[in-house]
Length: 312
Image (cartoon, rainbow, N blue to C red):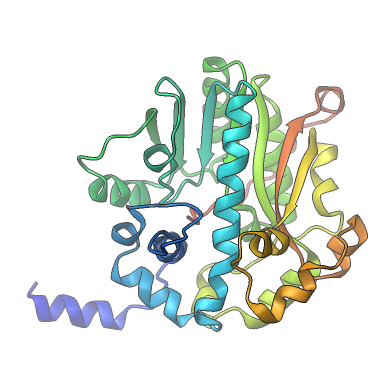
């Protein structure tokens, strides 16, 4: 196929071909933050990973550059929580739907720390190609697996659970694309291994979900519609064996690190309560610790999700 033919084929494709392309979109925001002189984190690989398609997707978003602040705040917060959990004794990190995340390369991590990335073959192969020749800071392993295969993921979780004593699970940018039933099934499967101690995830309120669904770009809505925003807020996971120990607002964090647009700044001054997380547009990053007492009375669901997308 000639270069002109390849270009014509690319132009005829939808901008967001599948769920994996959202990982390129988010990488653009990490790249833009990294190029600032006052960057709150630096990802020297993000620009290459995003590529031209990632930049095009970011430009197609309804709010353009104004959509970057939640992604920057989310990355910043999760970096902080990972460092905190490692300092508390975490001896393994399991990153589900890892997408184009580069923390094993860009963060200062213990060289002996096992870090496992799980995702679909296409996105991991793309990342490996771009990062060929780069050396991770820790012991990095990539596992190609469709997490929608419930039997396969349970087998994987059991295997990974035997390797660690105090593992941290990360699902950045994943749950919003799943239904409540799919999230519940995943939460119970993650609670099953005794060594899966803590879990970092991000979530939105029902009010924010309704806003995002109205403003979501048509190409993104078709390929990756937003779904999950429980009425219970962070307490949704308690009945599945996970207790929230830290709940941090993206809005307030963005204000603290000076990334929030000025017109949103007054909203960051409002007090935050459990009720406000349901009634107002809200999004945040949560750290959960497993509640073994609750898990003894939980019956694991057998609901099979249709898809579990990579989103970073």
